[in-house]
Length: 494
Image 1 (cartoon, rainbow, N blue to C red):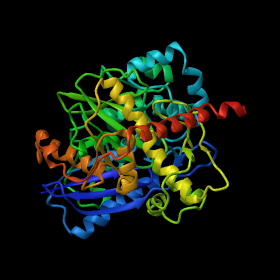
Image 2 (cartoon, rainbow, N blue to C red):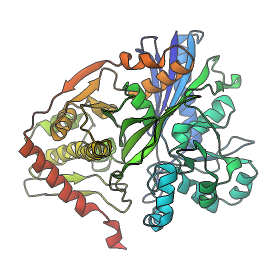
Image 3 (cartoon, rainbow, N blue to C red):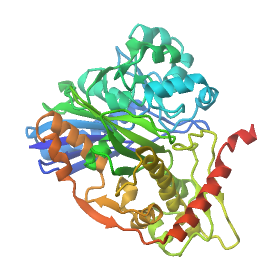
């Protein structure tokens, strides 16, 4: 018996097959390029994204020769990204606006310190920021000729990446609670589209998908796609909620981070959506037909993307994998600090006007110092979110579990443990997002019991802190001074 997992990330889509012991046995990946047509704008071609997904599915299924032993398929997807498309043709009406996009920053800035912002946060658990889907949807409705009328009639559809894929895979216009909870249109307590929020942002209800539980069956894959699949889509999760499940965390006391394009931290808080007092978000962790669990989340917009920028933008790295050896070639950054606010700063600052900063340079600064500073910045941003989570939870976490591509970097994992002063645990399978989507599908289809998921997690390596307290404090204070200088930087230019 096999479980399939579609991991629809920002820069690539993977399809992975797992056996009944949650071990990956086959996979395929397709790149999903992004476009930046203007400063602050980040877009993707929805049709290219769909074709990448179908291509990964087709490659694995062709290699297998048969899908008869496939019980179900789960989906984990990049969240907050918005697609609009025509109901009749299925064709996109505009490029997808990616979660990193900042085109609505001015609109959000006008709301930030208002009573409306407080009201929205109370309803949604989210801070006002271009990151979330509502302002992106409003932008599309205002600027695409005729879209609002079509949306109000239900002839044009709006959704996140899961909805776009599910529409084409199954013919159903659905999303789950975890993705809906990231739109800023979902009532965190009511667990449905909130009519007052829809009115506030001007989003027509007929254009939005039906909300279904995360652990539910969305339907079989359409035969006309030629994939010869009888297995249903049986689990839907936003990628970070999938990673939380993939790390086997369902009770308070520990947190997990996924280091991908950004860094996303989640800590379970149980069955009550308590509000953060420390600049974090409250979000749905997952839902079933009769229950819901919640988590605190801190979103860092640029993590692995900083290393990619050093490689592709500045050309000082041949490959991302070279970053570890360069970081280890020196004992410290010699005071160089990199604040990777390339698309603003997320939690706990929530400042879309922050900009990237490289500070502390001298005549002796070499590329190794810059590369090491970029890796340290990933860990230091993660540190800030973990400390905010601990403050909200009124406890120190016993460990941080790490996943995502950058978790393969031993230097980063060790430095993270050093600045946090707690162990960092890395699983054998770093692709925790794909694994979490498989778990969701497996639970929904009866392959696994919910209680058994934590026992399937396998530790690959544990990093214990080595840095003394004084050294830790010096690094953190230096980092905070640099962040203070990066905040609101763009406003000074206006």
